[in-house]
Amino acid sequence: MLNVALPKGRLGEKVYAMFEAAGFECPSIKEQNRKLIFENEEIGVRYFWVKPSDVAIYVERGAADIGVAGKDILLEYEPDIYELFDLDIGKCRMAVAAKNDFRDDPQKTLRVATKFSNIARNYYASKGRDIDIIHLNGSIEIAPILGLSDVIVDIVETGTTLKENNLSVFETIVPISARLIANKASYKFKSEPIEAILQSLARMAKEQK
Image (tube, one colour):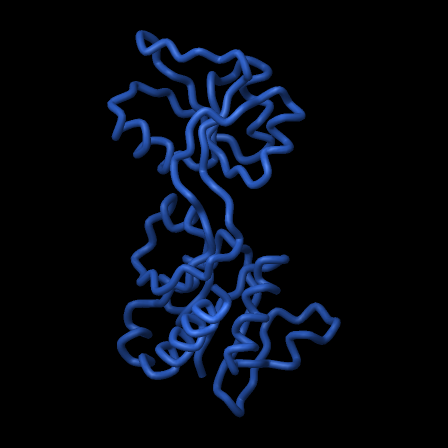
């Protein structure tokens, strides 16, 4: 059995549709129920739904052979996995945003609110900028409005939430999209089915361009 970790939600549904079109279908996954694990013994594939931020953990630890995770998760947690393919879906960007009238004063320590502490730390270290990271788990946009931080580092998709809160993007750190990842041992010992999925997805991506 090839174990595949799918991120719960809309992205996971898109990902499963790609796997299905590539010939790795599992009809029971479409049934209306609360099951989390679905198998197709005929083709030897088992899918399971997990929280998007946990996919990389399941893959790194070997509970899943392959999975799909956002590039933001891979950059933040730096799991020991193979990144095989950019699926070119779930596209957004990691950005620095602040109040519209923000002006950076290099003489002062920059206060950065984010749930992506590692990405923010690495980004500002590359610029030689002195920062104070304020780790938050949600509603990051409120931080600069209430004076908790000078800027935020967060995922930006459309920018609507920022605009509605009088914030603007000042810098783009990195583009983000969903990536196919593999457990290192699985890639060695289950290379045939993994390669088959990889080739099918790559072929489909080429055809869609």
